[in-house]
Image 1: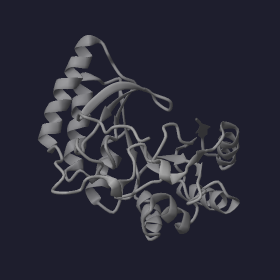
Image 2 (image 1 turned 120 degrees about the horizontal axis):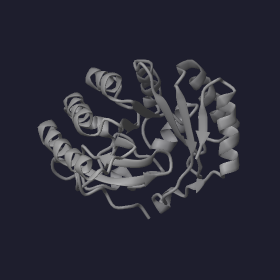
Image 3 (image 1 turned 135 degrees about the vertical axis):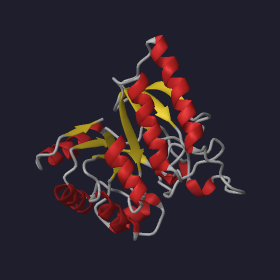
Amino acid sequence: MPIPLQDGWIYGPVHSRRYGRSLGVNPLPLDRKLCSLDCLYCQYGFTRAQDTAGRAEVPSAPEMARAFEREFARLAAAGDVPDWIHVAGNGEPTLHPDFLEMSRALQAARDRHLPASRIGLLSNSMHLNRDDVVRALNECYDDPAMKLEWGTPECFAAMNQVSPKGFRRVVDGLKRLDRFAVQALFLRSPRADNTTPRELDGWLALLGELRPYRVEVYSIDRPPQSEAQVTAVPKAELEVIAQRVRGLSIPAEAF
């Protein structure tokens, strides 16, 4: 079953299998998932199943700035310094309407209170058509980890339950970033399978074109919506995929 939504704007630090000790930032509503995709494997359940009645309440950039100052100062005073500060939360964080202002406030508070912590982002890559999002990622984030895990528009549409037109939007958007990592989750389901030769060949071709500085290869860890009928890909198979990425002279790690 999907896990509960985050109930605060800042949560943790928690242990992450990919990033060690990570403090989470949720610039999204507390009462619903807010996302532009409907991924089969989402740990919060399907997007379309969320209560969308009324307007989703998103914290303002000044509210987030005050929360950063308060919580980062508390952690610094306690000597509780996380390895990472990750912007993620209840859906897609770049949907925040003042994402650039919020990101600058985050960077400034980090620099004042937790300078040893790196700032990361977990994004679905769908909103790089927005100039403010691109500017924020290029200016404020040490490690923007961007979703890219399909080789064809058809698989993109099946895994994310959206139009295949978004596939090109993601690829074109990633070209606007100065540097980025790729996060790629592999799965099998009656609805979609991104481990087929066709998908892997297409995905590797995109990596060769886009040249991310790092690729993270992993599979499901928390159970998604049961109706998705998703099964995990074994670690040994993930390692084979990662090795193919390394063959492109791109660092890759399987989790």
